[in-house]
Amino acid sequence: MRIFIYITFFFFLAKETVKAIERTDQNDDPPKVSVQSAEVLVAKLPKEDPWVKNPEGSTLAWGESYTIDAFVDLYEATKDPKYLQEVASRGKRMLGHRDDYRGVTDGSGYSRPAWSVGGPFVVTEGTLLSSTGEEMVKIRSANSSFNNQTTVEVILSEDSKTFTLLVHNEKRKRQETFNNLKMKFSSRYIEHIINDPLAPYSCRAGDYVNQASNLIRIEEIKSNVDGVLTNQKITLTPIPIAFAGYLGVIYRPLMRFSEIVKNDPSLKDFVSDADLFIKAAEETYTDISKRLWRNGPKKDEGYYVMGEKGESIPADNIGQPFNYLAKHVCTELALYRLTNKPEYLERSTKMINLFKNRLQYDEEKDLYVWYYWYEPVTTIGWLPEDKLSHNTRRYIKQTVLENLSHGGHDIQMVVEAYRMGIGFDETDVRRFANTFLKNALRSDRRSITKLVDGSGDNNNAYFRAIYQWFALSEVVPEVAKAGKEIYEHREEETLPFTARLLKYQKFFK
Image (cartoon, rainbow, N blue to C red; front, side, top):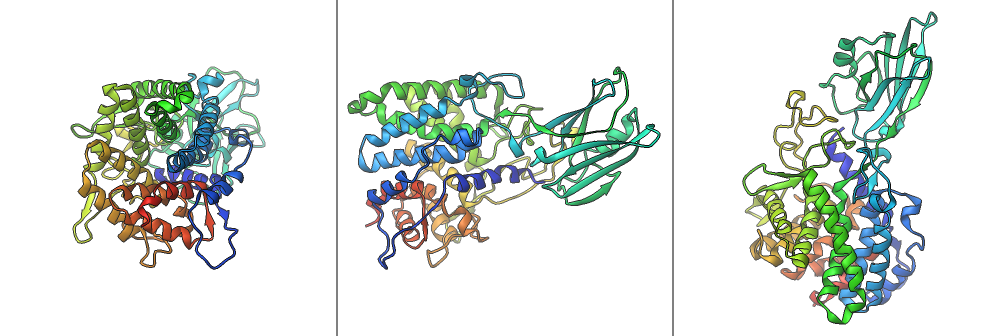
């Protein structure tokens, strides 16, 4: 299974969490972008804390943070402090779920200033027991997603001298059978069959007998255990990880709030909340910069990795894709402006360089296209002997173009960098605007494409995320005008989309 699918699926969560509301206007006039329409959407927001329903970092990153960001937009559009009060309240509630605030640890055994994830997209583990109840065989998942649906069953032969290992994943519709295994596993059999590092990573559906496993990896066999394996069946359980990829996404709206408050003396009642958010973000970035920051691949470039080597993320020790880095940049540039600490600017500049140096310029259309990831994912991949990733030991390069949903995060970084004169100038911003106007939008301006090169058709899935591109209208007002056209011809609306249009309505004329 391609690693990038792991990340992409969380944008499915985004569109599920930030629910679209069917329009109630029944007249023939185009709906107007208004505070009133935004208030209708605010009133329809769930009253309960979304964390209670799904206590995962993904709930906050792809749902609640979008809602908080929309309230910041509403404040910027109206200057009504009630929206800042909503940000303060929701932001503090969100912080209360951080691992160290709750006193919980992830799979590393540490309680980090971050939010753990588990569920279907982390590495899972399980243990087979001996007849005396001791841990005998430790198993870890080998696939990239839905590992929490993998079961492992031991079926003894009639004479109990051999057994069958039956591995099944219902989501993948895949079953693997390993026959006539002896009670003492052969290390050669394990390494060359079950744990074969050159196994295809596509994890196709079907029944497979005595072939390399795409579902599990045997991590350890304890030889000093009394007894033998017995008939048993286990389901692999997720190993939680305080996932760094979400952190810029979660903190970005809180930093926007903090800058607004710190720059306006009339908002002094919110200063303590801003100070709390800044302190929290600094704690987080102090932690991840020590563990996960890497310089390179080229001079004056840098990135965060998905997780430390061996942590329970399929792409452990691999650089985070551009969309995650983009939101780190937005957050760290804000921290630089708020604290004047140079490390935030230094890391941001290196991530901006990493992105800019890999843009592809379409001279005919005067626009940029780019990939979802960078090397080695897009260039040479890696082999087991490279010892790059513990969980994904072999990867065949994938040159996958960025899509409009993830690309919106990249655009936020571009505009933030442009405002500060780092990496991008007005010409660059105009080229990104052309990417939106010429590639992303269909000629009728009623629908959108899937990828930044203008290919694919995923209008419904990515429509709700394209509002992030509207920041380009600060240089090219036509982007906001196009956004308004799309808004007026849809049968659904969301608060983030509506609030962002309100913020940029001055460009409609």
